[in-house]
Image 1 (cartoon, one colour):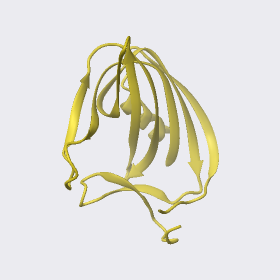
Image 2 (cartoon, helix red, strand yellow; image 1 turned 90 degrees about the horizontal axis):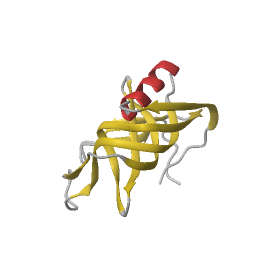
Image 3 (cartoon, one colour; image 1 turned 90 degrees about the vertical axis):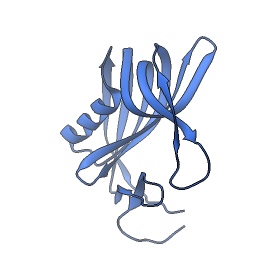
Image 4 (cartoon, helix red, strand yellow; image 1 turned 180 degrees about the vertical axis):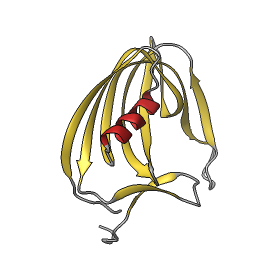
Length: 151
């Protein structure tokens, strides 16, 4: 395990409307506001998107199991933003429910808002955290630039 201690910067509240792209919008906010690290929470509705519900097995690199969100659902979730090279990389896990049907997973593509989605973004400062491509998994994983050892 490794960890770093940072401080809280700005808090940004965003309202996404019907049809808006959640993942794209979060990346746009991070670019515009030059947010290098953040945590965010969402609550509202989603009506579209492709998300991953886990790997098929334990092999590396993992083969993702994809699911499609194609109807309106209540949504709640949490995510982070750390940069990969010169672009913000959003990592978002959510729960999407309608009636007695509840789905959960890592939203990765075509994230379409239903009606309204509220997002609270908390900027994280004084961290040396970035995303770097991990050759074994093929994922852009959280890394720390300065080596301070494990804890």
